[in-house]
Length: 205
Image (cartoon, rainbow, N blue to C red):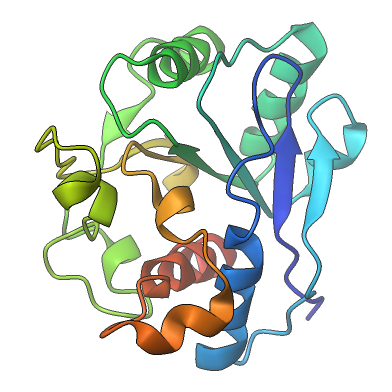
């Protein structure tokens, strides 16, 4: 098996380069908990690059506008329809913020107005490695970081041929996991374990 590579999608319209310590933290968890061979270096791939078409896993995040041009649109569509898995995280952790509005609009434009759907909290995503019986774990930003008491109780997805092609979160996991991986020893429970589920589900579905 080829080593797993954390591929971050670069797009021209917004601030794609966020949560810079998150990938190394998640990769550390994959090494710690699984037998998956892992490439220790994050890879940044432009959505304009044809190389995106063969990626098994990709990550897209930001705070600002997501507005794909013709090439980015076609490559994103082909990436998903060719069997790729894209984990998308809204760093604003909000409803109807700029990232959320623009990304959701792009998904409706590319895949149809009803393509992005809530996934149930008993979906196999939440039990494929670690068990999360209540669905997606809350982040500290939801519970006390923003003061708005806004907790997103579910994730959304675009499914293609019965599998998740796009997993979409408004929970700001990127910021939640954006710390030096060596600091996980101070946590009562490693909060990147859900990231392990995301990757393992993406690679084994």
